[in-house]
Image 1 (cartoon, rainbow, N blue to C red):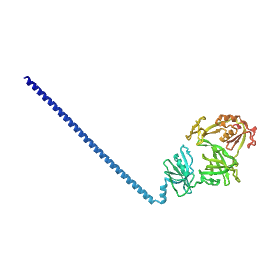
Image 2 (cartoon, helix red, strand yellow):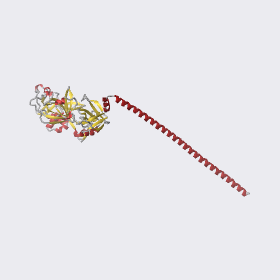
Image 3 (cartoon, helix red, strand yellow):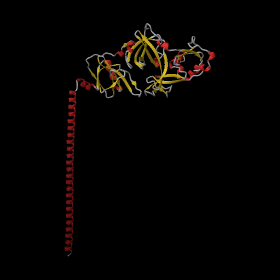
Image 4 (spheres, helix red, strand yellow):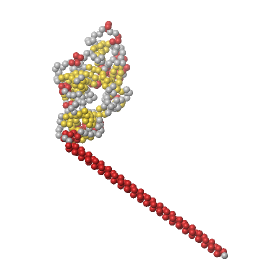
Length: 447
């Protein structure tokens, strides 16, 4: 009885165990089928997305191809139209159209670096585009100065591309050429040889007077007439000293304006060679003027017959012997390149950055400039102090004031514009304006 019951229990346990194992197997089979179906579905989805992506890329490629073809067709039509227009145009118009953005020739007179009023660096040159045809070139890309200088030195002909033509005020019948950073310089060959322009050669005064304004003159020689006019003018907000002299040679005479450092470079009745000067027009007459690159050299005395002192008739000078009772002297450093006044200059510094052109230079490059309420010119005061061995006072305005106040019997040379042109010790021997102490009050002696 017990055995039978035990067997029944074992059989029942086996049945239940088999049922459970069977269920587990079916469950695992269903799970495997589910995973396989999910994987298949995922692969189908990925394949479908891949096909869609390929289709989109194919459509984009076809669209780009159509756009490129359309642009090519439009460009071809434009070129054909331009060719037709050029074929219908006259030879002169065709030649101007191909050359309107380029110029060919030999380079001359490449200048050093210059600074515009807006502190933009540039340099100038002249290009010989034909045997006797010259044009002024202004380049606003200072990096091209080396290639321009080398082309001038080697005598190579060049082609300047991407240039602009501008109205020329110095040559009414021609034009100026403007170059920028986009201008290219190419070496070429031309059927004519280089010939330096007339501005590089030595000229007579008659030839200079035949030029127009703002023309370069390589060299002109002349004898300086004794009488000159010195004054101070304001240029771009800066006080500048100038001296106007008359030079003459066997062909004529003309006025020459000497600026700043050239004021004391000449003496009356002596002959000089003036190099790298330029012409100016004033009161419908051509005059000469010095510039930053000018040179003044003394030459052998020129025997000029019949030299007239036309300025002596219109210029009067007065010698005054007086004691200075009051004076104010101002000393300011000025840049030798742009002539800008330096408000924050430190005397003991070795280097200083110009407040005008922003170039850092040695402190010695900033020259002292003297001025005062007595209308004393810079050259008159500097010459007097150097002649008296007091050049050290040029750095101390108060010391100059004290020296002039303590000095007695100074002779002042005053021109018709009331500028003191010269200061000397001792009374005037033959003053042009006789003094009358009994009729003159003390205020007339005060400067």
